[in-house]
Image (cartoon, rainbow, N blue to C red; front, side, top):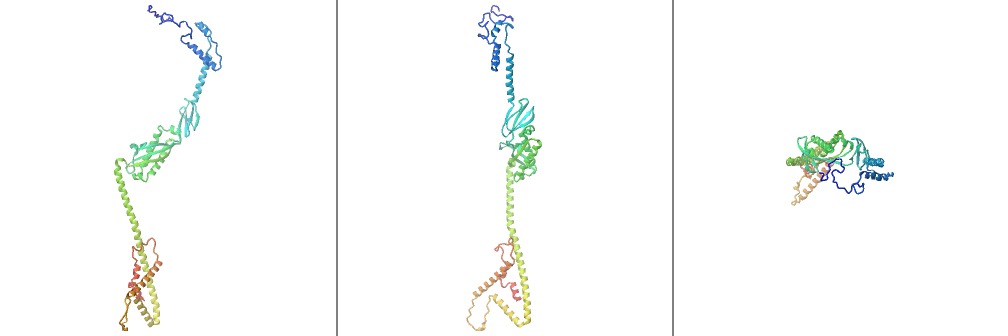
Length: 436
């Protein structure tokens, strides 16, 4: 070991080195050897003191180097520089720490400040400051944003969630409902502190509410005429539950996206719907026919009753007039029986011959040629009868006008009165002749 130049003494300052002199041995710090850390620290303190306007201590590097022993020379006092440096660093750190408590709240948001984990106050939009960590912390909440949760589907109605959408109705039918709920926040503190999973809470409340509403109604009501009512009642019930939970949510609207029976029974349900539509169509057609026929029947019956009433009035009035005329003729007959008898005979014969289509010829005149215009006589008699019948019908219609709503067209029912008046040989005409 000695031949190799290795010394194993722990007290030897050159332990582990060879016996050859080193180039840097005996050199001062800064003469090409490794840097002196103490000297570097003194230089740093001097520069820092010069920066803050303090005097630089005298340079005693030579004394220190010459001393070479323990307390051999006068060393500079660096405690003041260390304190100044520490104070400056502490001030910078304190400023950075205080600046970390500033935060900005955007428009439409609300800031919530926590003190040791407990809500202390809320802030509005703009620049705000709080005590930095670990004393206070902050969180911003968007209160004006319209939020939405989807029940029964995700993103698209084709992406169904059967576990959420299938529901049981009051008539024990299964229905598939997909809807969306839009809401916003009315209390950000309650939204953050009273809900573990905010959107999942709203989704569960919406599903619970619509299941209760659908379970109280029939399937046809939910599918067709009751969709708006179901959505409105679901919104009201959701708001009641969320207010009871103190969730800080305001429900804006509930929109039903798709309401239909399950896919497994869709074909059978469509057939049932078509059968129901055919039934309704046939019922409507029958009702339309009844609405057309029944008023006509009522009008026809009313017209018959009015005509019967008119005929009764006419007969009664004619009988009354005949009786009155007979009484007057009786008085005159009692005064002059012969003259009255001849007068009655002539009036009767005139009435009969004016209504008859036959012509009486006196054969005693002895004339061989006789011209009778039978066609003109018959036409003249028919025209006279028609004018008389028309005058009587007009007088009767003016005396008893029929109800407008109960009358029928003249082509649907023949006029009995006209036919009776046109027949000069009817029973009433014979009675008039006999009474005269």
